[in-house]
Length: 595
Ligand code: GTP
Ligand code: SPV
Ligand code: MN
Image 1 (cartoon, rainbow, N blue to C red):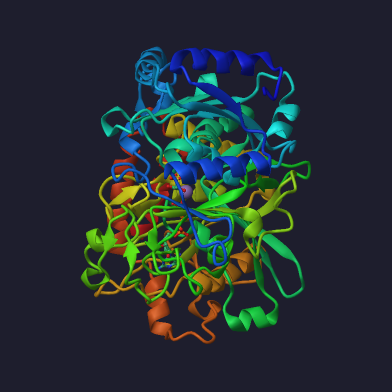
Image 2 (image 1 turned 90 degrees about the horizontal axis):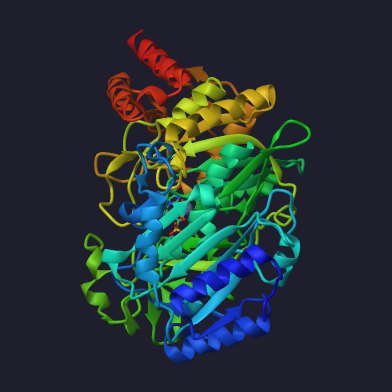
């Protein structure tokens, strides 16, 4: 049954149905009854494996094609009418040409299949910060993931009414051919088309395609921001909660920081972290002039490897019911799941992420081909499962942001934490951010690349316009702007070991950040910004000496001279469009380093 009389929606669906020729069309109404029917169907066809109902109630395992395990940046396009509007950091194609190519690929591809129509809301249904989309797909896996990651069903269409303000998401699995795989955004048409993939960020179109690529463009036009940021609330012993948003590139620690459990001595004092979001933040200036953020998602599509009861207790808890696991290892002994870093009990009777018998005795940490779970294997878990989900999570008005944090994986160079000297200087730091690449995207891992604001793969328009938008937002916010910081949990020693313990101990850094926002902590002014006095990072109960701490707070002039030269190179890409303010910031940095 159709869930709306909205003509723009119905016309779009019938147009797409004429193209792909499904056997039937099914609207996703959001009912548990309907979703359960789909789960059963997916188990019958082998698309999903039902896991141990006692140990993992309502949980399933899904395996994707081995050639379809991550986002594909080289096949992701921003199809704005003018090439200039996609900018130098995006792949671009003329929209008419791309529509034709994609329609030719998708034509008749639903024959023998069902077209599922998923009405979804990014953000609490009816929230002034929320936006609506409709995704059509021929994959039950996509339906079931979208039902966790977003708010789906009839209530969404009721809020939409007969408005034309909704995002069109068209997914066709086709035959998952990597040579014909395309993930295309058409920002001026509010449209997304994804073909020949069935994996995560490529096909859960509410996530990166809408909530970042399309939404960043909408935010630019409408005066708000869509960012690749977690949102957390830090509660102090007085019970006050301060909110922080942090942008780290994919697989660089957002989910972990968002769900952090403070070290014991801080818990005992009364510190606690509340999770609002772990991946995406939509932010608008509120009536009081401050920046307010919502998490547009309703679940976590988190990295499985490395998640355990110590590193991320709350994430692990979130996956214990009603969760879909993708590309992890299946433990045949008790029909549960396993991944590298879950625990030390390597399963002896198991299938690896490809479904082949796994030989634990051949496991070699240095050789990823011996792993049981894919390095980018994931869990899709409902946010409501998270023990530390913020009481503000479902509130449509969002939470006021006190601090914005940028960060990435840098073995050398960036200190543990530093504060920008101003909003403009913070935008400079974000625009120059670099990080080592991870398994979240297809391609080489561990290569340092510039990833401005962790948005390189996700900005839906010209990145120089995006920088200018950040600068403009800062002007509007004035003295109510959040303070901007940079962190790096990933400095390594000569043997390549991480120096900073990370995870829960990152709370020590968050506390310094909040203290700085409140004018309570001192700092040393350096060429790059304000660095903590070593004695202001609390090392209680930590096996770390002052000299080691000093070594990761250090700003090495030679290293930073090289860094400045690389930033200059990076900026060349943007030519004349680079905001003058950022050029000035770079000149100031160089001058400070030369002093
Ligand atoms: P996406 O979902 O891809 O956007 O990733 P994310 O930014 O949410 O990253 P996530 O929190 O899932 O962490 C990715 C990997 O980094 C995991 O293997 C973590 O164990 C590891 N990690 C997270 N935080 C830390 C930290 O503080 N220190 C160290 N050394 N590793 C960390
Ligand atoms: C990321 O890569 O940043 C993710 C996973 O959060 S995906 O949804 O695949 O983009
Ligand atoms: Mn992400």
